[in-house]
Length: 298
Image 1 (cartoon, rainbow, N blue to C red):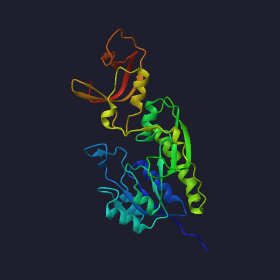
Image 2 (tube, rainbow, N blue to C red; image 1 turned 90 degrees about the vertical axis):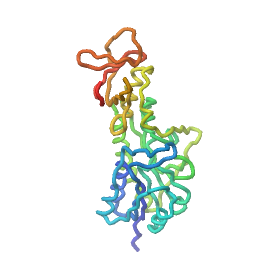
Image 3 (cartoon, rainbow, N blue to C red; image 1 turned 120 degrees about the horizontal axis):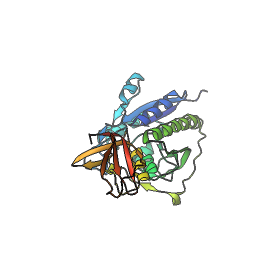
Image 4 (cartoon, rainbow, N blue to C red; image 1 turned 45 degrees about the vertical axis):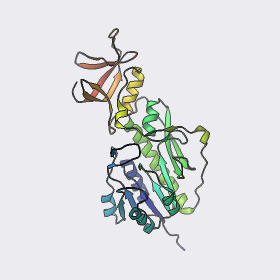
């Protein structure tokens, strides 16, 4: 008797999530029985106003092209209409990627839920793990595929893969590395789910580190930091994110790219703007950085 395809309900709202969805759809023994996504601007617990998903991707066109049922989360995860949509799909498992909302007990009782998190759990649980890892000068990070439970990124691990963070990485290049590893994990583990051969490993909760979500306002540069830190801070928040910035005469200057400078300007205050030979510099605690790409004229 031929075994039935693995019925998968998918949650996602980002470009990363869309790549994962495509990978799932490529597996011959998977059947996508529903896609749940969210608007680009949505409400979240840490903000009184709606926040913008800068990595947003529209999933509805894919669902239409492939005749997959689609639902948009307009309010909360546990709204009856949304949950009933998921229930009708009768999933074997739920996969979550590029999603920004807590998967509640109600959904976890419907089917086992598995999520992708861009860190080597239990390290960097919580929000914006890649940005925090770069800011903190980590030398490696990775991606974890785990079974969701009642905690934040605390469930048992299905699979993990590591990657180096190089001194040349921006958040965009690091994100691409992580995305490639995520697709490898999905490709390797879906057959295990189909055959019922998935093994789970407990996290070492004594090693857990938890970081908060980041808001656009968190991108303001502190010029009292070192040149090395500031250059890394800029790389960690460049496009497609809102960017690191400084404010001069009430004008917000976004700095997309910079490098540590060897120019010597004598004793002057951190944060001071200096123009020299057509180049733009800012003084830091221990030297200066040169601005290579910015927005809103200086």
